[in-house]
Amino acid sequence: MAVTSLKEYIGVPRDTVANFNGKQLVYVSWDHHLLFAAPFLLCIPPQMTFREMVEGPLTALTQPDPDAKNIDWSKVEWMKSNQAWVPNFGASLADNGIGHKDQIRMRTPNLNSLRAAA
Amino acid sequence: MDTQVTKKKLGLKERYKLLTRDLGWETTFHTKDEVYPYVKYEGIKINDWDKWEDPFRLTMDAYWKYQAEKERKFYAIIDAHAQNNGHLNLTDARYLTAIKMFLQAISPGEYAASKGFARMGREFGGVGTQVACQMQALDEIRHAQTQIHAISNYNKYYNGFHAFSDSRDRIWYTSVPRSFFDDAMSAGPFEFMIAIGFSFEYVLTNLLFVPFMSGAAFNGDMATVTFGFSAQSDEARHMTLGLECIKFMLEQDPGNLPIVQRWIDKWFWRGMRILSLVGAMMDYMLPKRVMSWKEAFDIYGVENGGALFNDLARYGIKPPKGWDVAAGAIEHMSHQLFLGLYQWSFGTAFHGWIPSDDDMEWLSAKYPTTFDKYYRPRWEHIKKLEAEGTPFKNYGLAKLCQTCQLPTVFTEPGDPTMMCHRETEYKGEKYHFCSDGCQEIFEHEPEKYLQAWLPMPALFSELNGDIGAWMDWVGLKNGVDNGDYVGSQDQINFDKWRGMATSNKQS
Image (tube, rainbow over all chains, first blue to last red):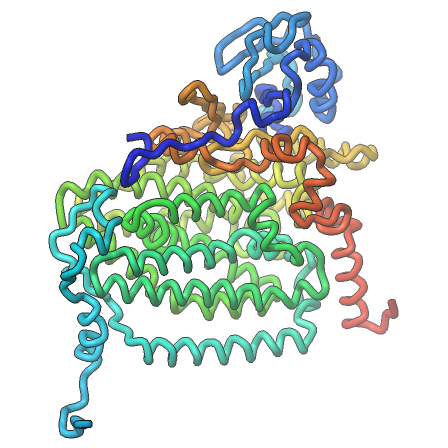
């Protein structure tokens, strides 16, 4: 049984994509860059291209990190749902297979200024 | 009318027996199962309810007498505190961040516990249990009231206190304790007793109340010390009730053990997540610190908790499943959470700040293997941003854990440089978690947790991302209740009034 209850009980999820007025949630985090205490929550339209997401909200939000200005976006390694993955910058989030509440992770192997002091 | 004047005066035990046993009549119109419909569905088997002895056998008249005496003392001290400008005796008004958090997040939990125990007093089958739960329900509502009264004096002088009940329902960080209590109250009576009576009261109360009350004493907050003392004698009774309940379940039927163990695992983990707020308070918010969060955990968690689980080992109970992971994260959790509270302080009804150089010295002495290595570089960079005129605010908001509802600030077990990413899919919908512990709780009862109202997604689904509208809705006055302590009204007023109280300075 999916919940301990007196009789069969079906819950209603609160955060389905239908509740976001045509937009969807996308979570983005930057591995080893823990100045940002948690993954960013973005609420953006699925028609937005990956490039627009990167150059818009993601560039703005990562700004406070000292590595932000040195990111070479063509060399960033990406993960989706914790699996290695290659995005198409020109395609929309939907065409990139980025669904509602997907978690995207970015890695910049040689850029780790604030990582643990050795 | 016949008066039985010749009868011998009853002893306490007999009076208690008369008080309670009449509640245990044999029903005739309805079956016991109809009268107590919730005592079986959780799978706990009870063969003899009379075996659950109320360890205190407190009668109602004695209860009123004790509590009235405590109330008289409590209000005498609270009055004295107000009349003697107790709000100026604090070490620093930064301290009040901890008290604002307490009022918004913890006091409503006392009220929730009162509702929960009132319900349990009705749902349990045994009379001893019914009376004990009823008294605990009264205690809990008294605690909520005394805390609100004690803290209300600060509301006359400082910001962030005025909308605590709206904060409780609507702001984001309060959803952590709120969901804890909602989870317990929507469970069956036995799980509720493990959640609140055992895990919260027995395993975690020392880690919540003792540091809070000694923190209050160290920082000159007599109002909080007073409600702490007034509640403390009740807590001893609550802890005993929780322990009696767990032993009763384990003695009644061997089939109860795996169910009880799973609840202990679950509620220990949920409790540890709430305690991350306490850790941040102890390590960062008290101007004058009592001890570090790690030191408190070593004393009250490792030593006391260890002794408790040694005692329960004879019933087959093992220490909670997440114990080692939790213990491994002790040197990180407060730093990870406070870093978040600082960068999201535009959305908190209390102030944040960058730790001073002295604070950081203290932190590196208390956390010699972790603070300088992992956390100091971040604060030094934040200080630099502040000095350059671009103070760090993280407007990205945060991914929240579906189970504990905290922002997912915690790192992988064994790797403090890597954020912990956990997700699962259920009925085509994705869910995210801060840890394996929270993911396992979800996966055991997904139909329960998929309904969670997560405040940050709700900002977009309900208010279209309008932060100003959100602030109005949660009762947060922008530029007054929130943001950095340095330059806040609270800081300016405290310094001014304190100066007037201790010198000839005029405003």
